[in-house]
Image 1: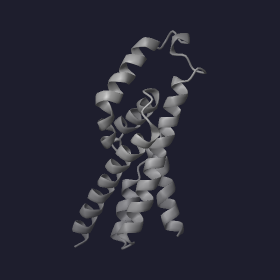
Image 2: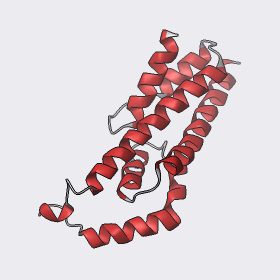
Image 3: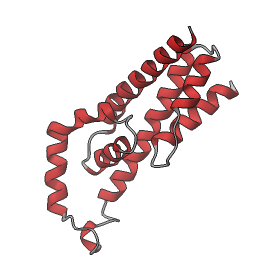
Image 4: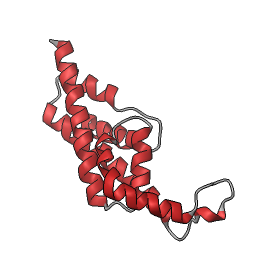
Length: 146
C-alpha cells in the first residue's frame, strides 16, 4: 500500500507546477509486476488531482484578489484575458486532453482556471488524457519486459 501511496504522491506533485516526473516510477512499478489496474488508478487519480490544483491556482489568478492591471510587467489586460477565456471555453478546452504533456500541460491547466473552465470538465478531459498516457507507458513497459 505504501508503494501505491508513493505513486499517488509523486503523480500528484508531478502534475502541479513542480518539475517532477511520475512516468519513471510508474514504469518501474509496472516492470516489477504490481497490479496494472491499481497502478493506473492511483497514478491517474494523483495526476488528475494535481491538475485540479493548477486549475485552482488559475482561478486565484483570475479572482478579485489578483488583478493583472495592477502589475506593469504583465502586458495582458483584463479584457484580453476575458476574450481568451471565452475562446478557450468554446474551442480550446479539448486541448486539456494533452494536459499530461510536460510544461505545456501545466500551463493549460492553469489557464483553464483563468478561463473559468468548469472543474468537472477539466477533471474529465485531463483525466482521460492522463489515463491514456499511463496506459501507453504500461504497454511499453510490459513490451520491454517480455
